Image (cartoon, rainbow, N blue to C red; front, top):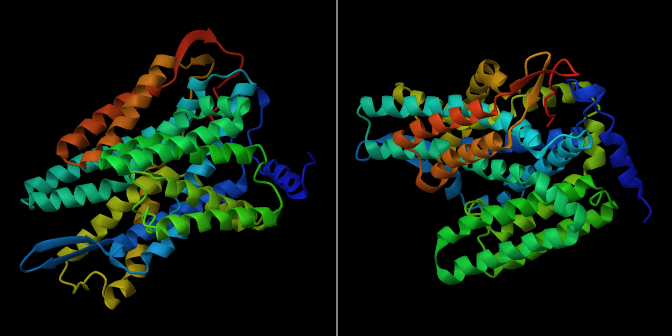
Length: 449
């Protein structure tokens, strides 16, 4: 089949933006600038959305009252069809991840090496966060705060951590899913879709919502698989076709939500994930690829490249710390004698830009302090780095357990402390260790993301 003009444009421009850092044996790793921009946009939308989500006030009768202000707004449901961007993030992660894996595989690397490289930016920044949360929960208990308020604050602040469990799992399976895609791409993605539909049906018929957690396997792997298809150029087709695909996805989603089979609020379809997220992901990713040429031109400007690079280098740090920072700012404001508007009131909405500005300043400071944890640990010069399969397997399991536990049971002091210990062990297991033999290269190359 002839390669279409847009596909040639995509493939040409994917190679046009070098990644900082060297690669093994002189290989030059490359990144897709549009995908980097997409991930930054996703992060911004998540941070702003959570700012509007968190509402807190102190009343005489009830004391500290915490609510999800954004969830109470009648206009929220249609907005989530665009603003709920986690499906798009997973699809982009599949695109970027499979490119990194194929580079490693081409030079004879292993799946364990790929997984370690990906998890360096996931596990290491999470350790200081869990340590901070442990200390914060302990301080709240020591100050005599109502245990119900502590539970609400801790669980609310830790709510985005579900992403770590789902994304870690998906990326761990990416080399295997890429192999299945190479052998039978249609059967692989169809099987994932059928599995997601079946699990949704079983959950609905049985009335056991916990069964929906198993769809973390099928839903997120399906969405990640979209990125693998895109890396092969499937989404680089005519722009009218992409618009039709996006429109069809949203039309089916509208029909299913209109029939009451799924909630029209895509946040409700997040945990446990449902087939509605698959349709949302196809629509969002099709729109991203439709605007690919425009976004590519935007990323050729110096200021935009610099901004995306600065945020992208600290992506996980910002994601992990944005809600703790927002909660701390709101808490400190409640302790001041300043009059605090009622969450959801007109005055409350008008104060959000001020709170956002303070939060951004705090996140900049934290990212400068803790952003170094996102940089991969390198092997010692002159030694060959070995990546043990058992170490990667155990560290992967330890990485998934804490955020998954938080997602299911919430966060308390015991879970926070246990999570800190497990994550620290996971990071330790991922540390490069040497065989004592001299390597042909002077330093192990980090896996580009």
